[in-house]
Length: 103
Image 1 (cartoon, rainbow, N blue to C red):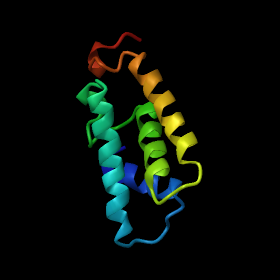
Image 2: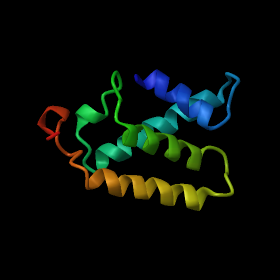
Image 3: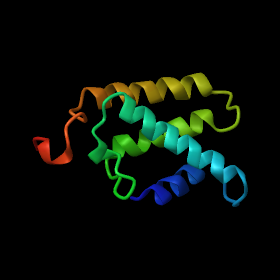
Image 4: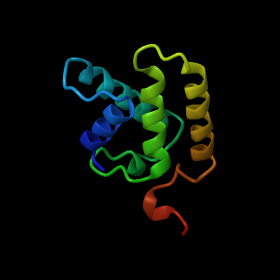
């Protein structure tokens, strides 16, 4: 999935069906999530904007967007879920490139 498809998926997760200026906010949240994943050591091959395929990476970005779009009542729970996904990612060998991983 490319980054445009990830943003569309985030809009769906947010139940945001119309196109408006808030789309830029959704895109920014996806950018922040991907930057945060890079910050914790995820190899750039997992974050390639043209080919994001790993389900944990995708879910982390979607949960981050859901937690930070608007002012959700369950922000704390969503950020805890994001942190848990990040913990799984940190322990899963994501610091290596896709070609370096062992199947």
